[in-house]
Length: 187
Length: 417
Image (cartoon, rainbow over all chains, first blue to last red; front, side, top):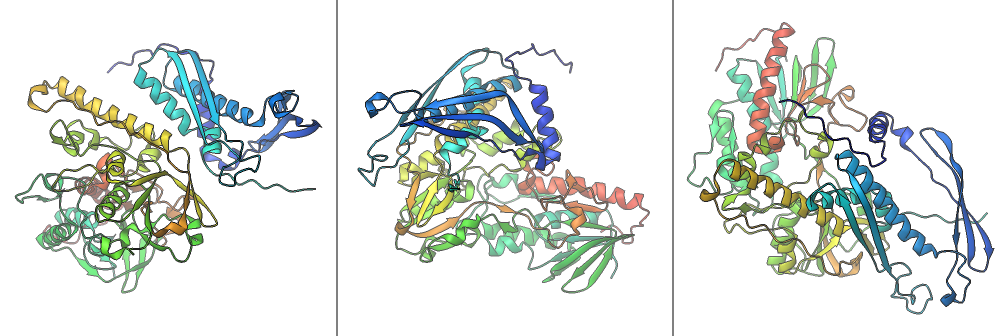
């Protein structure tokens, strides 16, 4: 059977490098141990600024191309100043970003050209939790819904499959849906 | 004592290999810790039947010849069939013998047992893939009052304490079958669902395994599959062998009143924490089922068989209503772990194993010369863990083994049987 040249797909993902990395890390699992970091400074009131500069992995320390900052605050309806997004909103953005990056990667791996990808995310939260009004209400989200709108050279079934695979291999999907050990200490 | 080949385990794999070697005139012994088909006698629940219809049950030199080819064999019938198989060629069998260590030496293997020590040229590890249950470490943190058992210790509903709910952990074939049986027997069942494979019992009028056989899926080879590690970890299909052809997928369990929760992740005091990602896994399983059924439809069209089979009616997708992410274990009297198994090779030369304790092999031929392994999922073909596939694997590996013995200059000492 002759091989036909698959149309070149360009979603901006360096799929060859990712496949190579996966192979290399299979043989060197120690190199796969990463640590992500953020440093947060209180500004005023509920306003804080997180700065992200470096991380470790592949047996070495690395720096981002520049220091990135995230401003966080509470909105005016919370009697605050709205100098930035709320931390739960950052989590929703993180989830959407992680899944979207996954969609791009999986699509490229499967030879599918994307034209546009939009994820709309909503997180339901009962404030009686964080306000300590009702002990039966959790602090976090009661549920999160994500809707993907994808325009691509693929059947609806193939697009659904890409979105399913993205969830399967998403860091933030796992972080949000499964328990994670968090240890908080004071210097 | 000396022989050419030591086969460890007298289940269907070990017997099939012995059958092949007997036919090839190769001197060998089969060492079995219990009786023939030990785990089939001692580690199956009363109502258990094979997932596959009887016409698929075949071992080298023996096919199913009963009067119920579309039925599903019980555990007891499977034991009888394996006994009959054993007596059909009278293998050189030593029962009640446990292998303590099998080590590579300069000219073969030394196999120390609770009986004799054997020196041989080749070893076949036919102990299967289910020697050790995979139970999460946090199981020891469950409240003392909760009765815990693994799926292989389950026998019948009457065995399960009447107080409180039952939590079945795991939704592969064992988990859904046990949940189905217990809920029908009047217990209140919750099932914790991780990754699973959903397929209908029958489609377009034929058993699903007949389709899988026809479209060639069961014969897919280990060296042709894209992600072999993932394929080898696949859960068993959510079907049951029964007279009523019923489904035991998640929608069917929901219809019976079984509560679905996500994968059991951790304990926090007396609260069980379950994944909030069940929707994702359910969508994935439904998608994969749809894709496979579509593949069957394409086969039907390619072979012009549409008029001969039933209409292409797809199962309904799985709908989840409020799925809690926490369970109050004070409400539960029993937890049944249906979380899968792994093989153990603590008796095998550690140089034969990889860093995770698995035999380093290619399609059952170990990297360690003269060592073979049988009975693992997708060992050589997708149906490797089904009885019929075991037999095919044993024949192919048996051939390889005989050639190996010839190549290392070992002469066959017994006449062909």
